[in-house]
Length: 170
Length: 366
Image 1 (cartoon, rainbow over the protein chains, first blue to last red):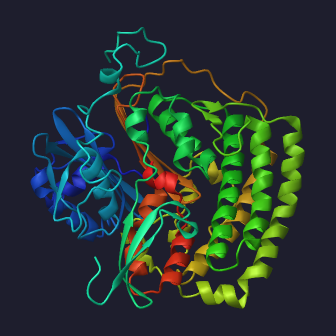
Image 2 (image 1 turned 90 degrees about the vertical axis):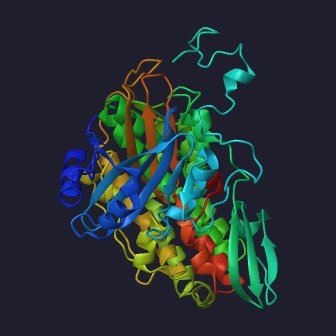
């Protein structure tokens, strides 16, 4: 796999962040950089204001259930510098709370409500944290992997057409 | 929501100005909107959850139903994301065919967007039907190629599903010949029309700073004068080889967004003409395994759909289905500014603003 054209490689983004926040990046890959949750809001604010990075637009924010943890993936971009940055944050599975970006980006509001609705991640400081797609009172968060699965409802059905019934391990 | 001075008014879920099953609650003080709350989710089909239970190929028809007015663009974005993560390279002919169909879809989608905007602004139905005339011809081309008009399911991982029939090219050429004249006709009809200008000029002004901060994309962003188009900024499908312009607006009002879409139709015609000139002979699809199992990885691939930045964020775990698939829906995120734009304006102006942002509810709710 190769990087997207605008994507700043994880190594380069790590070097820039390292020069201002020494020894804070624990993990990075070809495209993303993992930042600790206690410095999350501080680093994103700095990324938005620093002209070297100029993360003026929050392109996309989404969450993933990794079974032991939750992950938040951010895609920030600079329209002037023509660069995109991938950031990953790891959250606690039992009590997932992360600071909201609504004070920095208007565009975070609806996207964070979507993550709250479908994954049950709380956004600290969000002005209007309500469910958005599902109704108030809906039980559970569907995008969590332990949400009632299709297999549980129909144990006889194979998950994929080319697999035998009953053999459903990944 | 309503206070002593205001009354609450409910628009939708079934209302012509909401372009689908979309509900807005507004607190009105006389004719002025004081507060707005939007209620979405009537069309929520949990596509992202369903996609985790289906193979990569089985997920393609879902993408049609996300943005049902731009099925080809959604197919394309999804297939490109999966091709990137699975290292599949489509043949050159398929890439050029994809460009042709994606641009045709853009014209059809913009015709719908502009037609309904004019309809919202009070020109009941006549201009809409004019613009449907061109859309109809494009849907005919889709139908003769893949059998479907709306939910095309045409792109495949590694190419396109079918070769267009022989009569496709003659009909496409005659359509391309008349489209620029049609656009001029609309400009003549609307761009200097006093009523249309009164309803759209200086209505729903989005500043470039707000547009960027609110993650806007597509014509909503370009209408504010920001020349950001992923076909230029982050080319895919060989868009860097085509010669076309990015139309931008001046002040970011509803009229500018309308004009940006009209000019984009002309640019799309230019792209399709160039694509037909370079359309190579050869295969239209490469062979991929039935059970495609990409390595564990993640990809965020963005394309420029008719409504803006259409991104697919896919995480794989080595299995035959995505571990997680997120659709970055431009219609949904473009609504971020609706509350700010509507507050303080009158209700008819808010309806025009919503129409000029161009939402598709299937994509908002997914």
